[in-house]
Image (cartoon, rainbow, N blue to C red; front, side, top):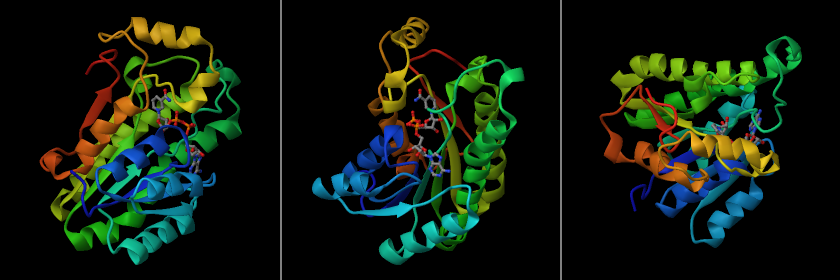
Length: 248
Ligand SMILES: NC(=O)c1ccc[n+]([C@@H]2O[C@H](COP(=O)([O-])OP(=O)(O)OC[C@H]3O[C@@H](n4cnc5c(N)ncnc54)[C@H](O)[C@@H]3O)[C@@H](O)[C@H]2O)c1
């Protein structure tokens, strides 16, 4: 078990890929704090039914109060915070459209959740990680940044911001033993993408070195690696997990 005795927080962990991360981290021995604006209890129950330990918290990552409370309750229940997976995002509900038709309130909301949310969650866990002299932050970006996917301007821009934040923050917190990395997933058959036309998946499969549909489980190994002691000299980096589509 590569995460035995570690405590991991997953934002946006109630469903989709975040839920798969939460279950995967627990399987490797982590005690997992499952947070979301949706009900995180079923995901936490699933972890407990499989013999793991979990805490379910309703957290809006755009609220400073919620994120501070998330860190406080994680420490109160489990005593420490070793890993933060910043997975929550506005993704599934975005309708792809030309940039001049993007609703301005939607632009603001995407930036608030996908970027400010990560900033707030990092700030919330920082005092505890600094006290421990060690911590791992894993930010979920997207391969869309590397490909410059059109009709999705706010989302792609926000995910580019996640990589910028990862690099700059890694330089600020290295002296405290805190490591910050990002994962850029390719188009993944999460619950939300099951609603999209099959054509979108086909196009992505054809563009890969490894020609098959990407599943949420394909991302779990990288999250475990970046959360574990095996990656203790890697920081400020972005790992593309997309079957060899985008490259950098
Ligand atoms: N599915 C893909 O193809 C794909 C590809 C690249 C990157 N990603 C990224 O992976 C992550 C998960 O993707 P998914 O397909 O499961 O998406 P999803 O939209 O199904 O899940 C996002 C989760 O974030 C939660 N969330 C939204 N706003 C929140 C808020 N304010 N506070 C807390 N939680 C909030 C949602 O409730 C949901 O559970 C996202 O960061 C997404 O951008 C997904």
